[in-house]
Amino acid sequence: LMISDIANPFFTSLIRGVEDVANAAGFNLILCNTDEKPEKEYTYLDVLQQKQVDGVIVAPTGENLDYFEALVDNGFPMVFIDRRLEGIACPAVLADNENGSYEAVSHLIGLGHRRIGIVVGLLGVTSTTERLRGYKKALAEHGLPFDKELVLPGKSKVESGREAALQLLALNARPSAIFAT
Image (cartoon, rainbow, N blue to C red; front, top):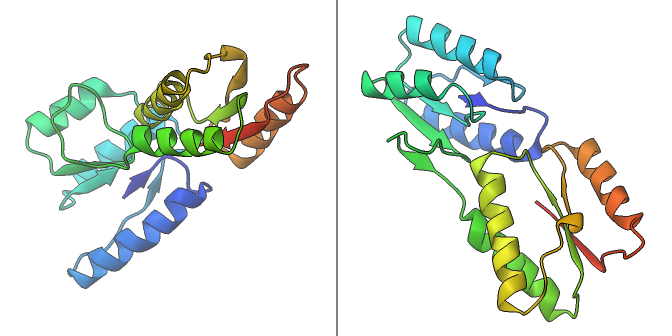
């Protein structure tokens, strides 16, 4: 199991679930943490392939596209989680990020909020792109303008998310709600 950030609570619970299912099926789990670093991801993929593991479940960093494509083309068993890589035909287990974001922002609008800030994860990662698309869709469908000043990256870390929220609250025209992805 190759995750992108072991400190992220989402991945902590995911690790637990994957380990339980793998053990029940008679497999052992090797855990790799890339820290969102493409070079660590590449090294782990190389080592796991050399060790001839039965397969890899990976939350990709969004880099190493050529290497992932070569692995998939050569039949290396792999499943993406949380994120996918565009153009690579690999099974994936994903949340409905766009609809989840749309529903959350629509709920805030339903509560009367008209100026809604959003703290997103890492820019360029598919889950972040999908969540931002849902945010924009909800605003548009409710006749609210999109203001890029209200969009700040939290880099998928608690501390950077807190800093982004504080930046939103420091704006002259503060948001009445903040949606943190």
